[in-house]
Image (cartoon, rainbow over all chains, first blue to last red; front, side, top):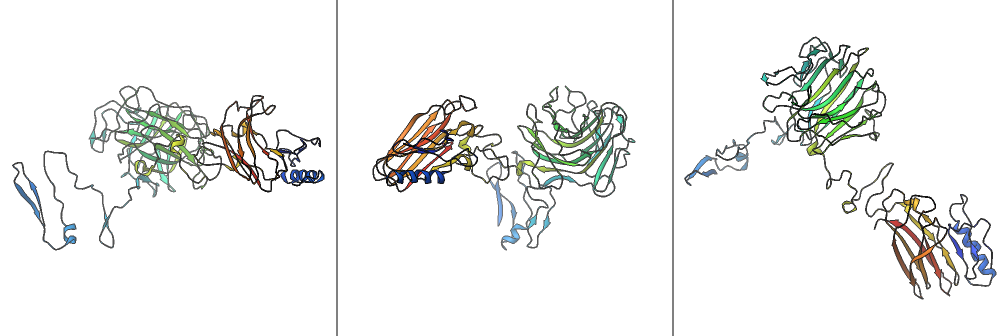
Length: 53
Length: 467
C-alpha cells in the first residue's frame, strides 16, 4: 500500500485504491484537487500493481 | 338605427334615430346622455384629442403618459403650471379664485418681493432651470404649487441641486393634500405649519451636500414620520444637480437617486417611509417648499432643471405584491445582469453551487471521496438541500457524508447502490447543522465506492439547491 502524499488534505477530493492507497494531487492554489494529475498517478499505481484499470 | 329606452311607466321611448348609412355615420354621431336617478354617466373626459390620418381620435398622451412636466424653458416661470406663494399659505387663502377658511400654513415671512407670480424676486428661470435664492432671513419661505391635481399613486422625479449646505435651509419636494373643491392645501389641525396628508423628500436641513430625508404625514397625524436621513443619498455633491425619484404607493414611499444623463444603475442608498403615508384616497398637488428655519449665514441658491409627475398606477407592474417578497412559491425566471446578485430564485442553480466531483474511472474496489463543501459556501443563500448524482458502468455505492465539526469526522447519512451492470444513483439530503463558521461548521461531501469490477465510465456530481 502506498502512503498518502505529504500534502494530503482529507477535505479535498481523493481516490482510494482497493488496497487502501490514497492518491491526491492538489491544484496550484491548494484548495482543490487536480483531477487529471490525480487520475494519472492512480492509473500508474494500478498498472504497477498489475491491476487492470 | 334608433336608440330606445323604457321610461318610469315601462313605455318605450325613442331618444335618437340615425339614418341607416353605415357604421361611419354612427361613429360620427353625437353621444346620447341617459338621464336617470342612478349614478351619473360621464360622457366626456374633457381631454383634447387630435385627429389621426385615418380619422381616429387619438389622445395626446398614452395611458402611461406624463401627468405633469416642467423643463423650465424660456426666461420666466410658466404660471399656467405653477402658483407662486411668497411667505407660504396665509390664513383663509384664496387660490385661483377659490377661498378656503382655515389657519395659515406658511410663516408669512417673504423670501422674495411678495409677488405671487413669475415676477417674484426670489425665483428666476434661465438655461432651462429654475433657480431659487433662499436669502438669509429667518422664517422666510416661498412655495411653488402645481395647478395640476393628482391622486397619490405617482412617481415624482426631480432634478435638483444647491449651491451650498445649510442646516437652516429646508428644501422640500412634496405632494400635499388639497381641498378637492378649491384646490387649496389643507392645514393639519394637529400639526402646525403642515398638511393633513403629505410626503416627499427634504434636500436641506443638513450641513451635508449629499444628504436627503424622506418624510410623510397621513390623515392629520400630529407628528411627521421621518426615518433616519440617508447621508449619501445624492451620487455626488448637490452642487451638481442630480436626479431623485419618489415612488408613491398606498403602502409606502420609496425614494432613489441617480446621476443625470447616466446609463448607470440607480444608487443603492434608497429611502423608504411606511409608518405614515399620505392617504391614497385624497387629492394632491406637487409643492416645492423653500424655507429658512433659522437665519442662514449666507444665501443658498437651489437649482431645479426639471420636474415631472408620472402616473405610477398605470406604469407600475408588480407580480403578486412582489416587493421584498422572497417566497419561493412566487419565484419567477428572469435574466440577471450585473452584480450583486441575490440567489433567491426557485429553480435557479448558480454555477458556484454545482460541482463535478469526479470523472475518473475507478479500479476494482477503488473509491473516490469528493471535496468537502463547507456550509460557509451557502452562507446567506437560501438553499436547503445537498444533492449527489452518480453514473457508472459497473455496480457500486453512492453516499453522502455529513460533518458537524468542520470536517474532522464524517458520517454517512444517506447512500444508494448501482447494481451490477451499471446505472445511476441519486441522493438528496436536507442541509442541517451550524453554517456560521468555526469548529461547528457543517460540511457535506460525496463518496462513491466501486464494486469488484473496474469501471470504464464514471460520473460523480453534486450541488446545493432549494428543492
